[in-house]
Length: 390
Image 1 (cartoon, rainbow, N blue to C red):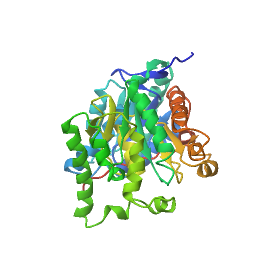
Image 2 (image 1 turned 90 degrees about the horizontal axis):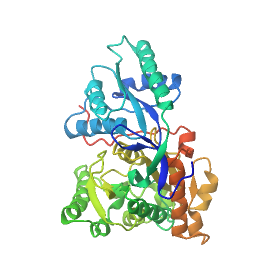
Image 3 (image 1 turned 180 degrees about the vertical axis):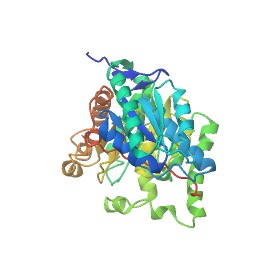
């Protein structure tokens, strides 16, 4: 099928949203179940899972955020169906997670290791449920969908002196294009926007959103002060400094370029789904994997990930397009990087032309093209913990 402008081939879900992948997710709600989940993915082609250390001895807002992340991943449009795998005695009960995911209309099965007689019986039960879901998913056919139904996540990891000059502003071009098509672009990495918050506040659609911009920055800085540390001991990182960045503010000014030029519609919490179309800021840490997980839980179907130092990072359910800020790193890490934006620094291409090239890649990946991270099964996962373990 020939694609027309502003269209891609996606999978329509029961809740009306559109996925660009058709995964069956084996979702372990507790760290004790992650190895069992991995055994199921090894047995059943078409399934994905992840390793984590969460799910028990969490309380309050920390519990709520982890629960929201589990449910958000299960309801992400890229997921066809979910096998929720619990231990049985954990704080984050598998039944509660499964019931919440089921509200989206997805096929959901619950397996409890304690209730099903241990690891081997649970692997068998989970594999049986997953195999049926995979077969059902394989019968679903992609259909023509509009870019207004896309949520694009943006992030940068291992920034260098070229990030704010090449890849990040090129991603900003894509952000504007997605917004102009009626879609949504998520800006994240609150720690890496400190010093540039006034630029985003000036683009807020209303006073409430403007105030929220300053609130999330102040809250992030306050967490560091409460620990008695300077946030600048972690940002910029040693790799950032080696790459030519001199300060957190310099890094932030470059990172903010990913937001393009359109109005900021709202600021949302970690792993929350946007309630508005357009440019949205999700309050996340600067940690690459944690912010990637948060955007996936918020419903992003694709993530644009820029890097100056190079990284293999990917997600189990969200295609992650890697964009190199300089040609030297792109050549060294061709196995991991999808697009080279270093041509901007070399004067061979403009920011706009690279932006359009990235946008074409978004269209191709949305319709089924695999990213390097997907091919290499780079299934990274981490939840932003905001409370101690009890």
